[in-house]
Image (cartoon, rainbow, N blue to C red; front, side):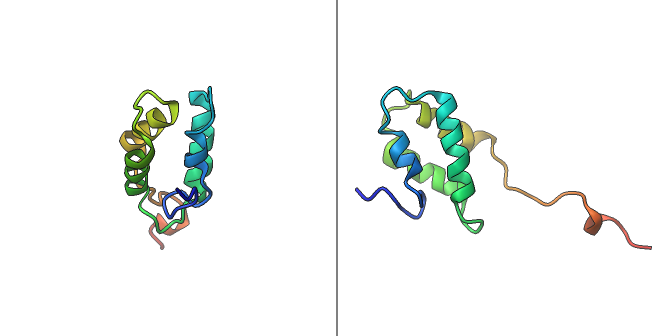
Length: 89
């Protein structure tokens, strides 16, 4: 299996599943790095679902837990506030 894929460009999730004794806190840090490395045009939820299908056979693995939590808590980013949202005189 190639560790770098469209859903995991740096192979971070692939490697996280192979680290013995990895903690949930470490998985969260890896997840953040993964999310930042994913292109802005990519469907984050779709990528998380695909990665869980590929790697998440053990639902008690800390990375499986982090990915599953991400599916339920991450919202699609939207621009809020700032000068563009205010009415002009």
